[in-house]
Length: 286
Image (cartoon, rainbow, N blue to C red):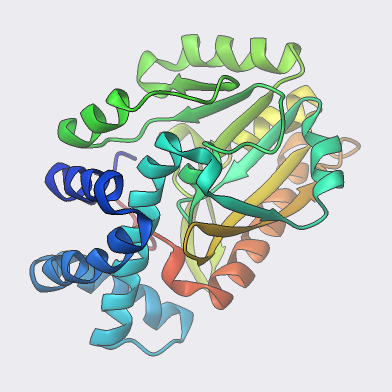
């Protein structure tokens, strides 16, 4: 599924330049008027978020809608600023030593379009090579800004899914054979082949079963990772290890693991509902 990245080149470029001139606090507060602009004009986003909060059983009003947009704006700006100045960000890991030990060898890092997942890649906790498998359809103006930022992180590699299934599969296989990390999104299937239907907050929704298939076939542990914004340039990183039962048949093992992940994701969204940035009807079968 290709979902256009929200945001615009002009607003991100403005925020980035203001950061270099006036610092982060200035950018943080300028996100209020920027968010208000989208609050007025992004009516389709409002409808999808209204459905999202309804399914979660939570109140939804104009203030909640505005705060959701503002949180997205902050996390999106952090995506770029963290690449420019990674040392200015603080990522707090629970049980950091355990996470380090897991990520020292081959691991599937399971992300979602939640919180500061993109910013965390600019300040990795491990020296092991992290291969981010992604096909994010972003505006050319946004892509240009990101590509012009000097890459100060040497152990990050992007595996672009637009290359095609065979080249991507080869790169993933090579990374795992080299004992490296594969980072994949679980909350957005990239093709019908990897769509897995399950109950999510009591309604049918589709998740990406590909990382679970890779885990089973290569005997690679999964580390679920949720990067939660907790303040100015501060994120809390919650991680949960999933081990597929290799004594079971593949389908059964994947069924159990995906349901476990979905339960973890539901618990996270109940605590931080305004940090999930899938701005479309996730439960709509298209």
